[in-house]
Amino acid sequence: MSTNLPVLVTGGAGYIGSHAVLALRDRGTPVAVIDNLSTGFRFAIPQGVAFYQGDIADADLLARIFAEQKIGAVMHFAGSIIVPESVENPLKYYHNNTAKSRVLIEAVVKAGVRHMIFSSTAATYGIPATSPVHEDVPKQPINPYGWSKLMTEQMLADTAAAHAFNYCALRYFNVAGADPAGRSGQSTAGATHLIKVAVEAALGKRDGVAVFGTDYATPDGTGVRDYIHVSDLAAAHVLALDALLEQPERSLTMNCGYGRGFSVLEVLDAVDRVTGGKLTRSMQPRRAGDPDSLVSDPSRIKATLPWVPRFADLDVIVAHALAWEEKLGDLRARDREQQRDAA
Ligand SMILES: NC(=O)c1ccc[n+]([C@@H]2O[C@H](COP(=O)([O-])OP(=O)(O)OC[C@H]3O[C@@H](n4cnc5c(N)ncnc54)[C@H](O)[C@@H]3O)[C@@H](O)[C@H]2O)c1
Ligand SMILES: O=c1ccn([C@@H]2O[C@H](COP(=O)(O)OP(=O)(O)O[C@H]3O[C@H](CO)[C@@H](O)[C@H](O)[C@H]3O)[C@@H](O)[C@H]2O)c(=O)[nH]1
Image (tube, rainbow, N blue to C red; front, side, top):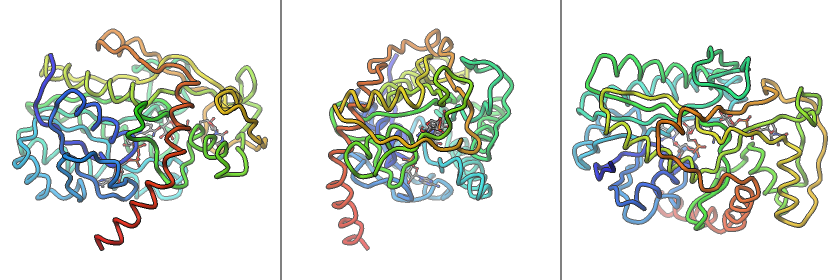
């Protein structure tokens, strides 16, 4: 079953949200976006999508959007996402991710919107006792970011138990890559994600790549992660929405990853293969709070959704990230001009 129920995408001007907007539009679902542009970009929202510049904690604005756009479901991406920042400024994360999600969920229930997909994270697991990680292992986040998301999952579970409402919490592993057609990608300035950093370095925007930790309990001593292509992730959201509509009594919590890990060195080798160059690597001490290995057990999502990943290939992920990075300089400059003109 697929729906043309209009969907509100919070954080739709950001990296992952903008890919969900594309996936929804590609199958003909009407989409509206709310985003305060704190880290997102106006250029990431396609022409023809209703855009509301505002905050998810603005209950009056939400009520207006739900009515104006006849919203039937919400995909909730808006939030703060930098793990080390959450350690330094935890209250920012409990405010923007947890408290503001509470306002959004309340507005959703009040308006009679019955379905929500929520961007959760593998950071809810902390340092998992087993790898690959199954959804039901005990959750012990090791940073406020992970807690802020786990608390929102709990609010959603309690809300679904009390109201005519169901939700799907998707716990993303490491999201990377860009729209294969070049319509969107990761545009964040000063990003810290490995593949983003590495393609910036490959294009001369950085001097090289720091390898954080070479003494992990992994085959080559560097951190292992499960990298998922952002367009496969966006496709999972659309299918999860269909699943919520098919069974309105059922809520879901599912890992989003491919179930196989790559070390930092393997990722850098992939970048070298794709570019034909040689990245400068500098071996550094471990970064605080990084687990050795974080790989998903994807069996639940595969059993629940008709999800068939299309880009589960590290070189493809890197190639798409690189293609977007090449395009990005001009887009960001144009966006700054538009912001100046609008001010
Ligand atoms: N990038 C990853 O690897 C990753 C992994 C796991 C989970 N996630 C989650 O996915 C979601 C999207 O992440 P992303 O990588 O696209 O980040 P992003 O920063 O590119 O996107 C977040 C968007 O939300 C907007 N926003 C933030 N606070 C807002 C608010 N209060 N009101 C309205 N808009 C607001 C920002 O302007 C931005 O456009 C986040 O919730 C994040 O926690 C990301
Ligand atoms: O310049 C860099 C950047 C990263 N790394 C290493 O690369 C791996 C991946 O790091 P990064 O890309 O920063 O992602 P994570 O810290 O694993 O966190 C991401 O993935 C999590 C889910 O797994 C999400 O919750 C987070 O929001 C998202 O930032 C880790 O071993 C890092 O130590 C480096 O060696 N050098």
